Length: 349
Image 1 (cartoon, one colour):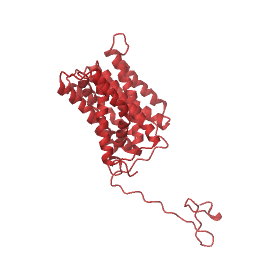
Image 2 (image 1 turned 180 degrees about the horizontal axis):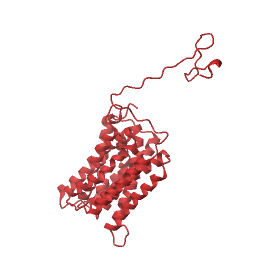
Image 3 (image 1 turned 120 degrees about the horizontal axis):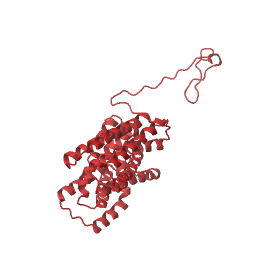
Image 4 (image 1 turned 90 degrees about the vertical axis):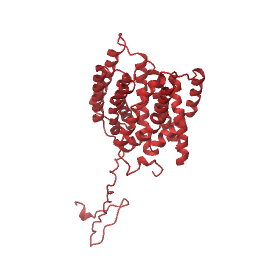
């Protein structure tokens, strides 16, 4: 399709490289959210970033003169908007009011498995039972960390429930957006989703600002965190991420997410000076191993498009049409599909 953005066209950089670029941008989302919600209302942070990114999306779509999506694509964009424009930002903002970014990074480590699960459901794959065992092991590792580091009663706290809800929303939005980006392109997929969400994000942002007027005690840090979430986490990061998923496949490029929890833990320690207890590192490693297993054990969908050849590789030459000789030396007639109709004498060839 000629109207896709450049990063998904043949000859662009690989899907894995684009995915890594997106993950690098996303890895600072939790620390930036933690800084922003320390002084700003979480609803303002969650939906204000979507409004700002939505205005950037309007400008981008007008600049490239993007054609409007079809009705079927609008319905799929609604799923993307629910998952990554509204659901994930809201639940992480609510969670990080009381939870640290380092704690959130360990729970978010389950996101690649959830993304793969939604990709399996959408593609109607039939993975081996070991896939589900590995996914269940990753979930148990996360729950064990929550019990050991959370409430004494062993029950997960509200922040942990918010984080798990955020994972579900994000995995759905990643899988749906990655598949839709094969048709629209990575940049236009997130841009149209942001535009579609504006009738909801603008009123919620306005009501939040009126009900809880911004009064940041550290305005520079709070607004810088919100600015990062708006420009990188909600806008530019998805340009690379969705383009990578479209070019390399949701499940395969989704493996790049395995580096995100580790990067987030590093940012939390370096920028926020949050302690990273040994149990967090152990839980993160356990979850990553389980997630890696789910990625390796996934089934390849029978209807999935073939991967694009590397940049600069010669296009495969068409197979020559071979026409068998008919009796008497005359060429055999061609079938409607272009293949030769064998003569009765050549039926065994």
